[in-house]
Image (tube, rainbow over all chains, first blue to last red; front, side, top):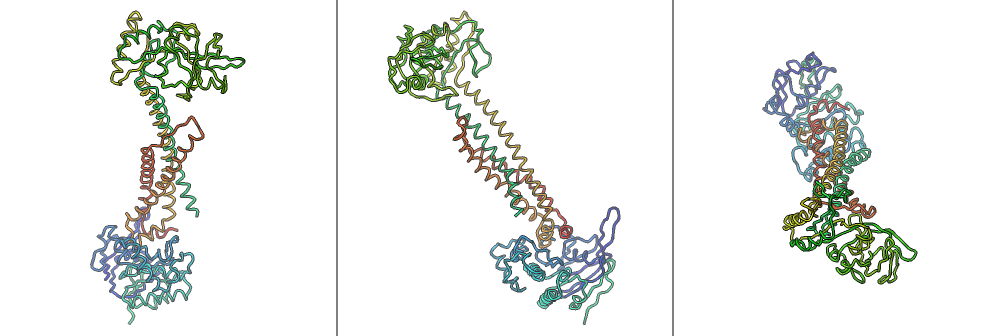
Length: 225
Length: 388
């Protein structure tokens, strides 16, 4: 599903080129549940940004479902993000002025779904994450766990094959956190490929594959049997 | 909540701009229409001969003291007899005088003229009669009173046959004019009419203030002017020591002045619209910065640059469009209300001013929205997501 070959990513700081990812290769199959771990500055976030088509590698090849991502235009990348990838962020990143329902509808706006159908598709998503009774609440009226569940509903509304989660439980108490993990594992059982960036060993424990990064390189890639 | 206040204040700039454009154009147009109507009321084929040569065409000229040769009653008779294109050649002497009746007196305009004046100025006699040719020939001491003069001197009593004193001479009242109102700032009802010959005697002069003539057909105006020139130059020792003005030329001059005035006012009002546009750009830039994170989120969820661009453009155009709409309503409202309170202001609401103001305000929204919207669209999604 995902094929990264010799990916490097440099950031320019003034005159200095700082390498963040060095010659990184990685392949991910459909249906995997992967934890990406590593100390701060190891390149986890950059890797996720590249996987999420928010950023382009400096060099190397990124093939997603057999299409070369690094050759795509900005608009094509936007379309990939819209249809193929769902994002779950540590700080939820909901639009504060919109209700939960409207937040879930946002990705559908950008693939041209008419307003009525957006509602019809967003409502069962919220139901799935157990927030059917909260759909008209604004994010500020929801708890952290509830907000993250709205974010998951939003990430899944377009049925993307890949879900990228960046510290999804980082801002949550442990009971909300384990609820979120339950939802994620449940999704994985239904075939969604999930990659989770995390520091949390408990999160990594539920994953079948753990990738350890250090200094922009994969130092350990183990699959649990 | 604070966003609503902010949007309202931003729109206020556009509202005031659009309102000012509409209102000022309405006032300019209104003045133009008023003057056109007033002049047209005098008859557009009117020709005026005034003594003294002035080079400029059109406009008003005071009778100059240094007239080489006077324009006389006989000149007007000659024109009447020989300029066959003219329907009338009406001699006019104008001055001010004090009229007295018993112990009451007042100052008013005295117009010395001939019987045709009544028809030329579309005036009507309420009671009695106007000046007759016999009165002119015999320098009769008779007077026809304007409605206002009569009212103030006699109240509601009968006036016909009463004798009034006009600058020490005694005149018999033979007629009373129908109420006419104000024209170009002059109160027609505050005049009295006496035979032109009597007026020359009264003001101790042998010349005329002007000769008014009318031509039945507009096409003949130029030829009629040539006729007048020919006749008068021959009578005036081959010197063109008079000026001929036409109503049409005057109207043109007035229109030119008012067009310039309207253009200047509109220009000034447009500046405020421009300032309103800058206000929109300012607030949009603030809004883009405040919502950087929202832009990042939307981009992560699949918004293309043009989607973000469109979102902010729509906001800018909505602000300016709504401002434009409210501005039109307020401007039209004021244009309708102001004349009720300020009598001298006449307004005319023109469709083109409304369309112009609205188009301009929408354009301002687009123009000043592009930069902030582009700025928003080109945000790097990762940077935008990180911002607080």
